[in-house]
Amino acid sequence: MGGAQERPLRADAVRNRARLLDVATEVFTARGVSVPTEEIARIAGVGVGTLFRHFPTKEALLEAVMVRRLEEMAAQTAQLAADAGPAEAFFACFRLVVDQSAGKNEFAQALAAAGVNVHASLQEPTMEIQTRLADLLTGAQRAGAVRPELGMPEFIALLAGVGRAMEQLGADPAPRERIFEVVFDGLRPR
Image (cartoon, rainbow, N blue to C red; front, side, top):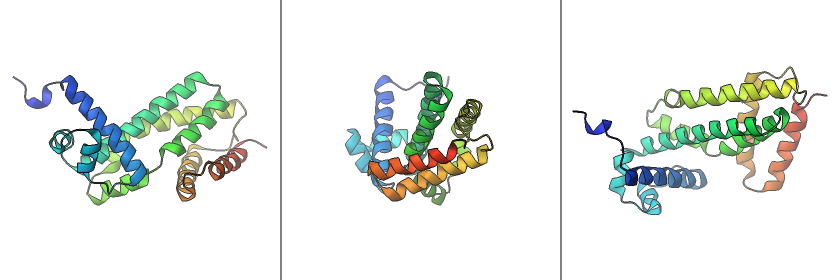
């Protein structure tokens, strides 16, 4: 006979876990990782005991939020690649990754400070995204939409740098759009 860990979650437990992740993602991204877990539980409409049954520590919740964000980003990237031409998919994905990077560094720093090996826990979804990004880059280069000399290390560095730049700008869409226009212009072949 198996232990409690092997039993599938009941439907209400699955809903509660999903709701907690939704709320935690929204709140931590908007307000930072210092928001108490009790507030996450209250906003999600569940007791703090329910939160701790799913996520025994705040770090476990933060880690689950990061994994979920990366998994969703990988799925959205795959959808973009399937729905659009190579150039459109590449630039849309660039925007997506930059927009989704909000708060990521703060999450990673909080987890590292708590002794969590962030790279190990996020390795699988990160590798999936990097594989998809490499495919998008290659497709856009073959289509003549992106400079052929741009490699993956530069592409990843640009994504990280633009993400950090956007954090400095705040939510105002006009300067954000100007940054994208300048970067995209630089990515296109001369």
